[in-house]
Length: 229
Image (cartoon, rainbow, N blue to C red; front, side, top):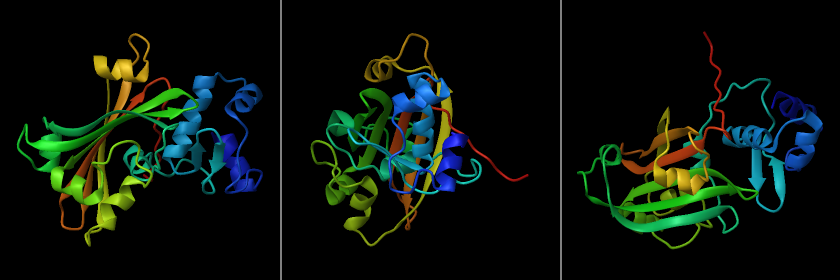
């Protein structure tokens, strides 16, 4: 990743232009395809690259000299524009909510919420399992309850029909074994762990308007951070 960051910073890969394909990068660096995919996923989560199915991977912003930003899977989900080639929708509809999602949303356990769940795809690889839980009034007002992929990013939908700003996303990360449902959805090999990121999207009134869980295959993702001492 650091070599790619240097090339972006030096202008070898200009903003808005594509970088070499996964196959070309793998050949140049002597890396396997999963290793290349993991590196590109990480740079996308950091906001440095934009991956578009069928078109390639594009420079989104100049890279910093080091990994000084945080990986932000929840934010990446909020800003994603879905289409039928980049997501495989698993379920959409009204569901009873269980803990800890009920706690995040300030609802009683088993209260009805709107759930969207899909698998994010990158060049046919199942890269992440995303679940979005919204209170029913938020889902109706924003259009999150529509069928199929969302052609408008979730962040825009949440803010388009209200005067309340989105102010922050609180996330917590843990490594764990996948559930049977997650293993099937992500085509995981036996005993492969996952990174599960659970986030709360909070507006200017202090209300949690959306709970987000992003489940990442351990073999494809590596979250990285840097901070001052």
